[in-house]
Picture (cartoon, one colour):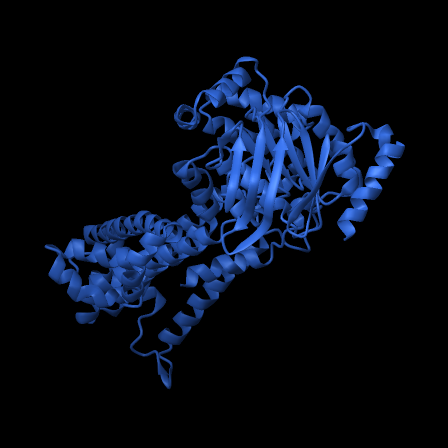
Length: 291
Length: 275
């Protein structure tokens, strides 16, 4: 409970500082005089929430990112498994993937404009490309790092390729795959917003850029806050899904009330779970949100 | 899965001729579960590094053959070849007279450790070979639960592997290997990672659960006493060769450890291994 109080206090303090600096028009090298105050932003936010456009922007952006991200998840995992498991696939696809990978997804805007008949598809394409490579690379590593004994065991039970894929490769690689998905959803947001700013019709990124061009600074901040909240919500969703699907991992086996403090007055959980280091886990999860 | 391997066996029998055909039919008709495993002038190992050369070995149906040798002498290679995971470099590897072309469900492999799928409960792990054979859900659950009970894990069935002890994991692995009614069980130092007391208990359990299955067993170990307790015969490996195969007097008899014939054999085995 105290931890939640701390978190709320931290956000409140940041907002308080912002309000203080802007309402006093502080100009100490950093200039806060032109900056909208928290109250301005809150008022603008309330206005937007009452209108239709805000919700259209929201659903448009969400549709784009969900479509692009799901495509990237499915194709990224499929390609990653293929490249890791088949030498032929590695030889055929490897060089192309390695050359395309370093190109920032947002630099593909011209390609998207040339290739796709509508802006909408172009934006989804860019979002897809952004998430595809992190998912591909982490899947490939996870599949290659599988314990060989698992596959041998299933083979000696008479299991064929598809059985090994379904019973060993996919479940075994899942923890690694979710690492890639967590990174991917973050990069996807960056790219969907940027693509909307460049070529969108509606969408949170488009709106934020519009507000900037008409010098509506509180509006810009509304857009930024919206992006932040949406990004946080979607990465949390990916994170929670990942934890749920990889509950078998020894390291996530601590009590579901979670993040048990080491100095908890309660008796420690059963030996097996308390022996697992709980310390690095929250930090790791947070790192992935940053990307 | 089982259907496809059966078709493969049938076609092979057809090409091999009538003699092997009869041996297969008698084996299945009389419900003798064991199978004959034969190596002839076989060189085993990876193409770039042969581990064992010129191996001639015949394991009759239902026999427990233990294999001892210093670490790195090719014990695991021998087992993997028999499992079908590793093709022989030269010579032939046969099951009931038919060459072994790949892994099959009737030759189960038990690993030293870490071979249970960590995301499946013990029950689901034991169910896996049955699922691969296409057993209906209710039936495979029942059979898997019965096997877990036989190895004394009934109350642990829903636990994940990392939540139980090493000995319990190996018992679950044993249940998984035997659940699918294999005709041969290949065991790769299955008790090697266990402490001495657990190990003795596991040996007794193994003898108990094998009783009545009639399965042929090839049991690799680096523990001479374990080899002499479990094996009808003991094969000695050393310096990249099969050194000798010796009959064990009074196998699986705990009271026989001070039997003069057993003591003499133990001394022989230790001497030949120390060269």
